[in-house]
Length: 192
Image (tube, rainbow, N blue to C red; front, side, top):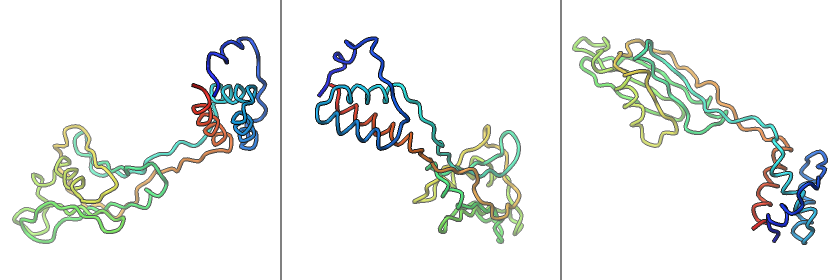
C-alpha cells in the first residue's frame, strides 16, 4: 500500500504517460501490486489526469399527444439501444363507456382510450395526459416511465399507429476509457 502523502512529497516530479492502452495500465497495476512505487504513482497520475472519451448511453423514448399540457413521453428506464425496440400504440376502445387502459405484451405498449356512451368515441375526461401516464406507469413489470407535459390536463384523443421508441444509445467504451477505469479502480486499492 502506498500513501497519498508519499505521492504529494514528490511535488514537481513529472511522470510522462505514454499512449493510454489496456496493456500499459495492466503492466502498471501488476508492477504497483509488487511494490513498485513509480508504477503506483504513474497509475495515480493516469487516474487523476486522463479524461478519456466514450459514447454516453442515452435512454430511448417516444412522445404522443399535443400542447403544453397534453404530451405524454414514455422513456426506457435503462439507457441502451435495445430500448428502441419498444413500441407504443394508442387506440380507442370499440365499446361504449369503456375505461382507459394500458397493457404491455412483449415490448409493445398499447394504450386504449376510454369512450363515451357512444361506442368508439373517446371521452376527454377519461383520457387526460395525467390519466394516461397513470395507466402506463401502472403496468406491472415495466421497464419504462411515462411523464406528461405541464399539468397533463389536456386529453389524448387521437389514435397513434404503432411507433418505435427512438434515441436509445448504448455506452461505447474506447480502450482508453477501459484502461482509465482499470487505473482508477486499481488506485483506489493501492493508496490509503
